[in-house]
Length: 231
Image (cartoon, rainbow, N blue to C red; front, side, top):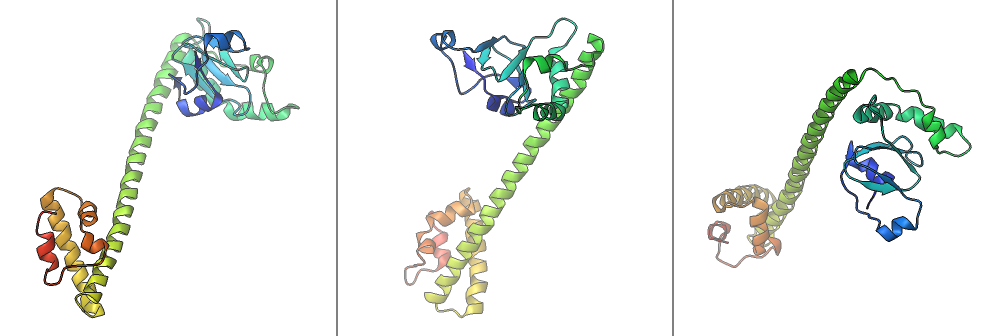
């Protein structure tokens, strides 16, 4: 059996397809786990009160999670959104009791707005569309964040490489401070251009240039001569 925890519900989104944990038949027969069939709406009564999800496969869980199987008058996705919308209220209900939990009796007492099933499905369609838009926006944000992280990493790496080139220019070529800085900028551009020719990133080419990493060059070899060869 797929073993669903409240943590799984928190990370799954609307539907639960799988879990990292499982329960054997023997284990199931020797515990108080409950079986939930596909389409069951799961509702957390302990810890993260009000967390909910819909099972997309047969699974089981502990008594901390209540499984609700709607009848023909109630769409399971509509119930999911209704419970999701009331999560803050359910948390307050739990805090009002002697123990910060809910129980089946309290959940059964919750009044639910119940429009005709056709209207429920129409509401679900709208909310599902919004969910998809949010999911796409989240993916775009994650992609942009990754781009920013990569750019920041490249900037930090470029700064370190430029500093290494500066030290080479000062210590080995004997340039003064101003000359060493200006030359390092030109050298960095040469390396960037060479990286494009080789079809690799500038950072990758830098990683192959031991003379930069070790701040050493062979006497008589110019930097252009070195990076101009296949590295």
